[in-house]
Length: 82
Image (cartoon, rainbow, N blue to C red; front, side, top):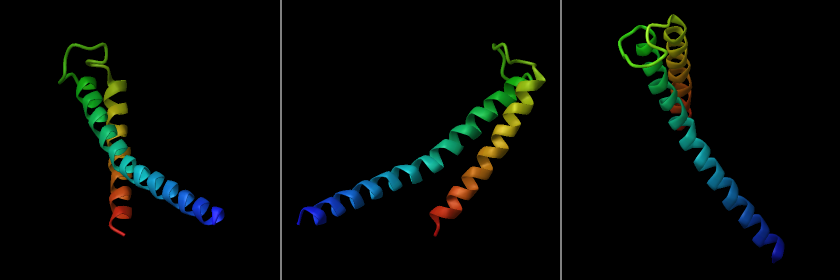
């Protein structure tokens, strides 16, 4: 009986961790897109008031973050649809 309880407990933990991982697989890329967008706008000089304003490095870094975030988000949504 003890082994059965241990297996049930292990399955419960695995299901909970999987649910959290799925949620984070969608939240993380959305945050990456938002932060990347802010960095892009700061880098091109649209958002003022930061040391990043007008610095091309932040424009390119932000654009890269947006692209990577969108790719990860598309992959996560495709997996969620299965």
